[in-house]
Each structure stands twice: as C-alpha cells, then as structure tokens.
Length: 520
Image (cartoon, rainbow, N blue to C red; front, side, top):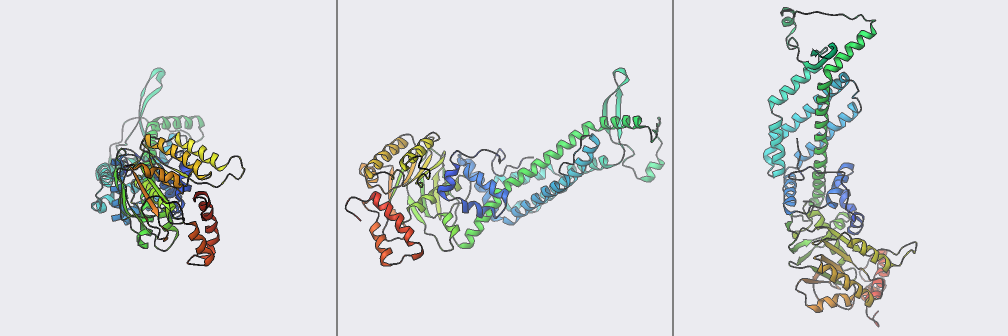
C-alpha cells in the first residue's frame, strides 16, 4: 500500500539530507517562527515541515499536485486532523505494548505478529471508514487515489479472510503436513488448517475420528518435548516469516502515512493562525524554471507577521521577464523585510504550500540561496570582506542555472568604490550563467551602474523616506536618508525610544559606508 499524498509516484523520505545552504536559509530568512507555528510543539511535524520547505520541489507538476492536496486539507481540516490523531494513536499503542516482543522461535513470532496484525487490521478498517464516509469531500488526485486504494485493497472480503486466518493462528495446537526426505528426515513442512478447527463443540464430538496414530510424550521426557518443539517450529517457520513481514509492512504504511499527514497538519496550523489574524493567503501560480515570471500583490513577510500582533505591510511587484531586481533607498524602509518575503514565499510555493499574499506567481527555481550581511568574525580570523568572499565562493560551487540568489547589503564592508566593483563583477557572472538575483544594496555606484545600462531584464525598486515600508519602482539615489533618521532620534519625533539608539547606530553605520563625501 502506498500513501503518495506528497508526491504523485513516490513516498516522502524523511531522512534525506538537507541542502548544503540550509543553515543560511534558516538564519537569513528567519524561518524559525514559521517552523514553530507549523509544529505547535509536535516534534514530528517540526521535522517534516523543515525538510519539506528546505528541500524544494523543482517541477511545476509536483508543485500543483501537492497544492491540490493542501487545498483539500483547507476544505476538510477536521478529517485530516482526525486521521493524523488516529494513526498516531495506533503507532503509540503498538510502541507501548509490542516493542521488541518478537522472539526468535517461530511460535513466539506467530503469537506476537497475530496480536499486532489484529491491532493494525482494526486501524486499517477505521481508515477505510474515513474513505467511505468522508471521501466525497476531497477532490485532489492525491487524496482520491489514497482513498480509492483503501477501498480497493481493504474490501470486506479481504478483511474477513485476514481475520479468519488470524483466528486459526490464535487457536492452541497446530496441524502440520510433512513428507519424508533423505535418511527418513522430515521435509516440506507445511502449516495447514485443521478441518475440525472451524466446527463447534457438538460438530467436533460427532465428527468421525480421524484414522491414525497418537503418540503421547511423558511430561518428564525433555528430549521428546524438544523434538516436538522442533517439529512445531519447522511447521510454523514459513507462516511466521510471512506474518512478521506483513506486520512490518503494515507498520511501515502507518509510519509513512503519519509522516505525510504531519506536513499537512503543519500547513493547517499556520493557515489557522494567519486566517484568524486576518492576513491574506493565496495559492501561488508556479511556472517552469526556464521562464522568468515574478509578479505579486500584497506580499508580506510571514515570519514578521507571526512575531507581531499588528498588521504587516505588503508589497506589489511586476517583474516578469526579469533576471535582476535591485532594491535601494531609505534605511529601515522595509528593504530587508521585502527580501525575506520573496525568499520565504519562494520556499513555500516550492513546497506546494499557499503563500502570504493576495496573489503570487513565480517560476520555480533550481535552488534558493542567500548572501546576507554577517557580523564580524569574533575570533578575528578574517576580515568581513574576506568572509563575504569566502561565502560567495562556497555558494558558487552549488549554484546551477535557473537558481535564485538573494543578496542583502553584500560586499559593503569595504569602501563603496571597491565594493561596487567586486559586486558588479559577481553580478555579471551570475547573470551570464542564467541565475536570477534580488539584491538589496546601499552602494549607489553599484546600483546606478546597472540602471544606466538600461537593461530590459532588470527592475529597480526604492524604499521611500516616508517610512511606509512600501517599495516602489524608482531609480537609485545617492543617500539612504541617514540624516533623517538621526534627526528623528535626537529630536524625539515618532520613534520608539526603547529601540532608537540601536537603530540609530545601525543606520549611521550604513550611511557612513554608502553616502557620498560631505554628507551626514
């Protein structure tokens, strides 16, 4: 039996390796609050959603397949949560009562496996009841195939035969057929159904007694009892192996179902919270990797929304047929927040999920990478510029055509002229390799250089000094308005005094690196 709720033709593999840049993605995009909200304290859900988001789908069909499954979950969340609880209870009961109970002798294996398969059979019938009574509420290929499989493979005749065999194996005593082989040794031991086993007491009493010989072994005959045990084990061996394999197969099915349902429950958890808050969510429109599509309305940073109770500002963008997006403008104008929203929404889309926006469309990318500004090396093993270049070199080893890389104030640790030259050479090389970029930069020479080229595949956005956190199309400018922020802080105008000093220090550092000589 196959689950196939997350993929059309394969199961989700939980123990697969994470991409090489997973730590940077988690740190730069602030994925912690998203994972925590999806998990709600469930360790399995946390592990599954983390793997699902960081190990992106790279095909449009795969994304659409999973989108359909998640859309069904949003329409019938009670059924999905009930199935997840039921599967979890089944596996927990098995763990508490049958962990390590299988012995080495066939008779012990038979006893343990019969008990376990009885439990699993009852649980499978409950799953089939979900398919019979609730299946009409699901329209996706994934759920319809899953429910059809349950109804097809767990029909009443099959379940009746399974329970009949389990009842035979549960009765005391066995009937074994064998043949004489070389040296008059027994061979071809086969467990058979006792023809009198299914009759009632009266039927057995009135039945004709079988012709044959009966041997009685004395209770003190240890050698005789060992011989009988060996004969019993020989007769039960094949049946014990088959039954143990069946129990293990069913257990594997429940574990796989629990894993894939965990991802769907995680999606429901975060959707519930965002819907209750009133923030918009939409199913994105994925495009092939070789196309250049990126347009959205009301896109916001989901991690920021999860951390704060108030509304979060969303942004609009029309950047189809674009390889390069450069964002410049005012300090604390929402540039980094916008960059994170682009990255998180790309990961969510390529996990088959909804995204935090009113509408969203983008091409699937071969890989998502980030190069964000880092704090200086505490051990002083290298300068900030050396560290940035080393990280860029490491990223280059894993980049492939049609990847997407997000830069946040990269290479600004040196003077503007040198930083702009370095960043321009890197940008040119990436664009020539078919890699898409979104870059937040305070380096005017870098941004203006590309603006002056009049590139048809480049879009320029700007954060305005009015602090609305709305990015608008606009050419790069020479200042990040550090002076405005300075005056706001020290004149006490509309800035929270509890955090103004740290904000001022950060923005003054940015302004010092980027503004032209003579400006303050």
